[in-house]
Image (cartoon, rainbow, N blue to C red; front, side, top):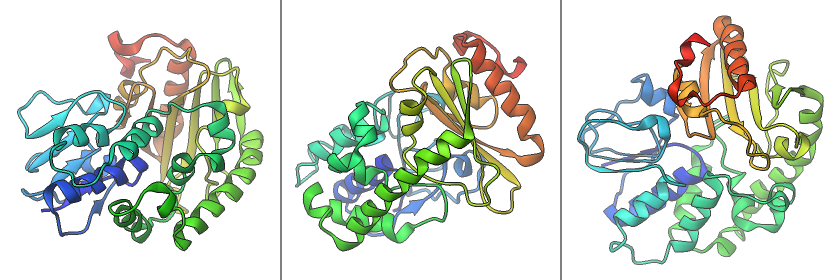
Amino acid sequence: MRIVTRPDFDGIVCAVLLFEALDIKEPVVWVEPSHVQKGLVNIQNADIIANLPYSKGCALWFDHHFTNQIDKPFKGAFRIAPSAAGIIFQYYQSSFQRDYSELVQAADKIDSANLTLDEVLHPEKYPYVLLSLTVSNEGQPNEPYWNKLVELFSEYDIHQVLKNAEIKQHCQNVIAQNDRYVDFLKKHTRPNQHVSITDFRPFDNPPGGNRFLVYSLFPETAVNVRIRYEDPNKDMVVLNVGHSIFNPKCNVNVGLMLAQFDGGGHRGAGATRLPAGKADEAIHQIIDCLVKNENNETLNLGET
């Protein structure tokens, strides 16, 4: 029996809960949603998938993404919710020896981007927010670090976790990274009406940082499109699209829109991977849809 989840804060908390509820011994399998969608992950019949699209043959599935809804019977739980961790927490609520309610509330808050301006600008003042920024699926995979967080949160509270030397170093790195990231955003982001477009394709190794900072720097915009190459080979382009958490005027269901481009996500945020040779055309269509700002839940976005 294995946990198959994605490397973000919600995925970390999902793994913590599932390890205790089901007494799992095998290590976590960390994968990206697109890998599951394209059948690139070898899902075994005892696997538990969390915070990812459904894959036929798994034993249990827990998710909350708008575009991952299915109309076939399955074991587990799905609903539109702030986090997948919250769904698992409720599903196994009588199985936990430790009180994970605060950790799950943090996953709900962070994964739904229910953050204040001060939390975005000064994450160092907010332990869960700061730590969540150290968990990224961009750049080089860091499975040992993700596994370390799962191990620590299975035993300790947030304040004890942050005392760990490795975790503390990652947090310090994030604070320094965010200071530099502001300059990158200012230089490589352009507004197009209410859409801000951040293009990091000039970089072989795209800069990383707090994904919410762009909303504070361009408060007049309601949605951001971030474009980058997946790796130095530059054969795949990654698009991240997100509603501003401070300017709620974007009407487009992002997950549904990106599902037309082999991606997906929530109503307010999502991502897709595009072959570099076809990326510009798709990016143009996506930006055009966002500029029009129509409620796409009744539209065929493949024709935009």
